[in-house]
Length: 104
Image 1 (spheres, rainbow, N blue to C red):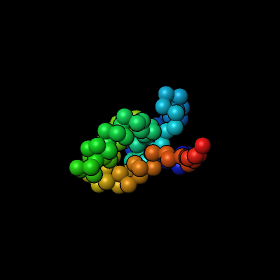
Image 2 (spheres, rainbow, N blue to C red):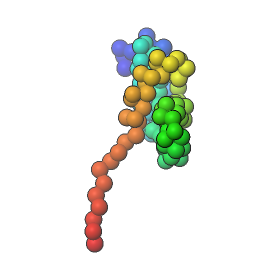
Image 3 (tube, one colour):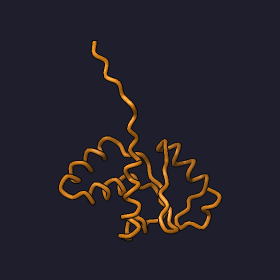
Image 4 (cartoon, rainbow, N blue to C red):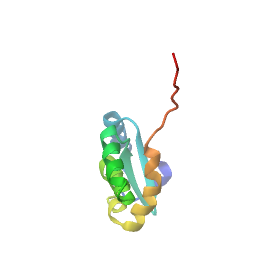
């Protein structure tokens, strides 16, 4: 991320390393000169986000963003334009692995 030194909210390599130790995989979303860091959502967060997202799809993204945000530019959460742009990438935080059903 050497080229991203001028981003608003840029974390230090040491901070990113600490987050990785604490949360495992850490992802970043960059929007219009701002950067925010996110951990992978857990089942509880996904369940809650899905339940309220059926009535209001924006609430799904807000829930993911608020519960998975671990640092960086707070403007990505506050500014509607930045939020909506970042929202298009929030689904990528959810990793779906290939599963196999075996009939016995």
